[in-house]
Image 1 (cartoon, rainbow, N blue to C red):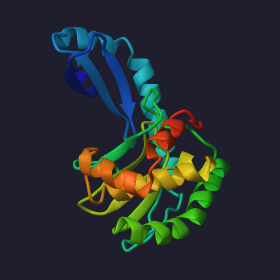
Image 2 (cartoon, rainbow, N blue to C red; image 1 turned 90 degrees about the horizontal axis):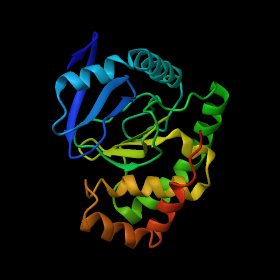
Image 3 (cartoon, one colour; image 1 turned 120 degrees about the vertical axis):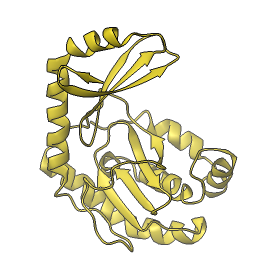
Length: 217
């Protein structure tokens, strides 16, 4: 829908309330609305929040621009920037912190500290887990994400990690990396994925639970 000059992606779901989100990296405006909600009511809802929408989109775009210069670890595909690797069709990911949709706006020094921490740990982690999992990513990129700790595109072998992991306990980075590497075998979170994760990290569910209680902003 085009509402007050804003392109809005509307999804109707079996829910009671309407939700408005601004999704990184490009500031896409998304609305989740009840099944029977009229287009007119949705348009009024968004139009009434136009100023907030424009402000949040501006922040998302600024955050993306700030991360473009942050280096990420490159495997066979070479090094990449933290702003690369936007999630697309076929992606599998691990749910992370929730919010308004915009990623945290960190100063460059903080982002560099987080990136340096992850890049220092990745070589050893990949060397250890590659033979265990049986597959390794072609490329790993780092970026600030507001709704995922990581994501994977099995078709290309690309993995993205939330930059926030660089300022958290090392076991969380290890868990998310193994989680995404497992998606190179199983794109969803079904029986095969759970079986593999349990064989790699028997306590992965407990780590996931702890991780989702430790959001760095």
